Length: 250
Image 1 (cartoon, rainbow, N blue to C red):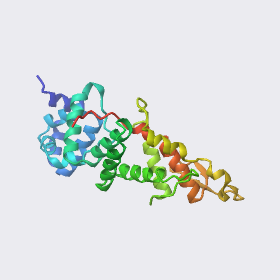
Image 2 (tube, one colour):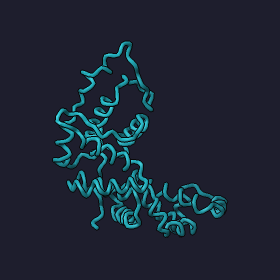
Image 3 (cartoon, helix red, strand yellow):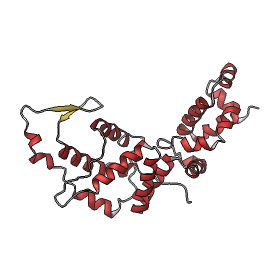
Image 4 (cartoon, rainbow, N blue to C red):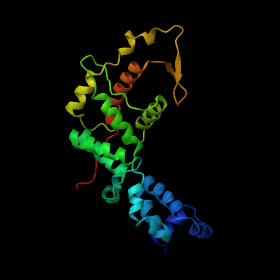
C-alpha cells in the first residue's frame, strides 16, 4: 500500500527520476517550492514533507516559517487545525506576513485600533511590502483635516499605488464582509472628500492630460493633492475587505 507521501508524488505526476533530480536542488530552491505548496494547499504541504526528506528537513527550519508566504494562503475550512498550526509557527517565528495578518485582524475585526496599527507597522519594518503600503495609507487617511483633505503623503510612486491597489482588490484577498469597520476608522473614512478634484485647477487643464495604470486603463491626470485624496478614499473603502478571521488564540 502506498504511503500518503507516495500518493502525493504519484498524483502530482512526479517520476522516480524527478525525485532523484530533486535531491540535487539547493535548500533555497526546496524552500521556494515548499512555500508555494503550503500556500496552495496546507494538506499537500504535509504530504510533500512525508514524500521527500529534503522537504521535511527544510520544513523543520525556523527560517522557513519566518519567510513563508501567508498573504495568499488558502485557509480551507476543512483544514482549520492544520492552518492554525502553520500560522502559529509562522507567527511565533516572527514572520512579517503573519504579524501583518494578525494586525489586520486586531484592527478591523477586534477593533483594537492601536494594537493593530502597531503590528502592521512592525510587519512593514520587517519587510512585508503590503504592510508598508497599508501603514503608509493609514497614516495618510488619519491625517484628514476638517475640510476633508489629507496631508501626510507617503513616499510611494503612483505606479506603486496602482500596483498595491491591484493586490488588495484581487479576488484572492478581498470579499470579507462579515464584520463592521471600527468606529474610529469609519469616521475618518467618512470625512475624506473624494470630490476635491471637481474644484481643482488640475481638472480644468485643456487639453486634458492622462496617465496609464498598470492594467492599461487611462485616467485623467490629477495633482498630488487630488491624487492622494482620491487614493485615501479608495483605500478606506477597500482595505477592510482584506482582513480575515485569525484562527489563532495566543
